[in-house]
Length: 201
Image 1: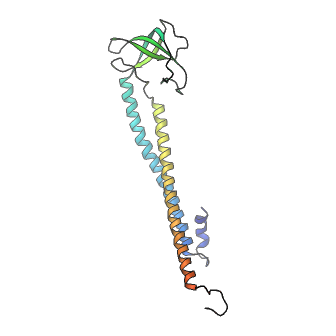
Image 2: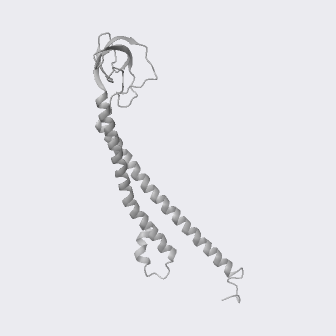
């Protein structure tokens, strides 16, 4: 930013080197590119992700069905299971043998995780199944899909800005190395007697 601000001051400054102006123009170009590329990239990635996730939401909502289940008996807890219906996925739950009716009308039974604190035979709770009555996870909801899309777009925008900044730094580093190389050649041309009385100009 200091180099960009100095563009105006350096226009007629006799001490201004061409490399100083070049670095300032590179910084200005990188800033403008980041201001354009980052939002465009974020919108493209976010929009594409949103479309894909919303299609997935619609597909899941069409193929997954909430059905009531009835507790038959409790089962020993399984510490490796994580409840898909909890927000954090870390809350403990009970495992029960339950029976339910599939959307196609067939009766089903099997071990089912539940958030019931003290499940008893005959208690009813909700589960999600596919069209054949097999247990499945809760379908993704629209708000969660939109949140994921926004996060993807934001990440893509930040990545694009970081890529532009990385390119600017590489170009400036290359320019500084060339400047140092020119200085080395100038020192070699001046020779080891540079600055002594009676030598050179």
